[in-house]
Image (cartoon, rainbow, N blue to C red; front, side):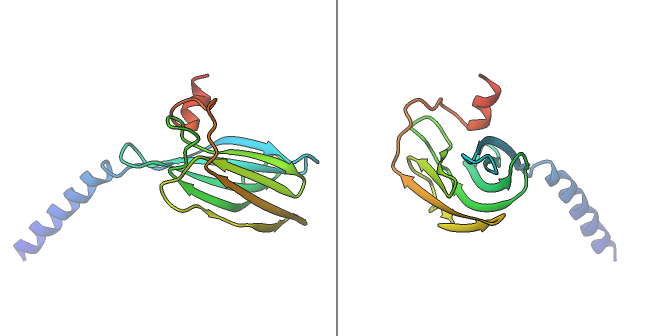
Amino acid sequence: MIVSRYYASFMLVFLIGCVGCWPLITRNEVSRISSPDNNLDAVLFENNGGATTSFGYEIILAPKGRRTGTQVGKLYGAVRNGHAYGLNMKWSSNEEIVIEYLSTEQSPIIQKEVVFEGHHIRIVVHAGVTDPSAPGGGMLYNLRHK
């Protein structure tokens, strides 16, 4: 009985101490582009799990001005050049979004087509595209330090 109380007390102290060790994952909007007809937004979120991880990126389609919608892509460790994390998005038409990046650490998960809010949207991916004008570091860092 004494051993089990000692063990339970030890585990409780250990777990409480470890809570501070677990990294907090942050999710921040770093880019938003509106469709040419101004009905939809493509929104890019940068996820940061701490110093021992790379940046994760989520792309969602949302009604104009909203933060919630349908996820259409996830990329981990995406870079735009040798010093800049992230990716670039642009609408080529009301029905097509183009995603560009140099490389990723893991294979991206991107839907090729989605129907959202009555719109049929194609997502076109161009890997291997260098953006020499992208500043070094993460996208959120560069938004905060302009």
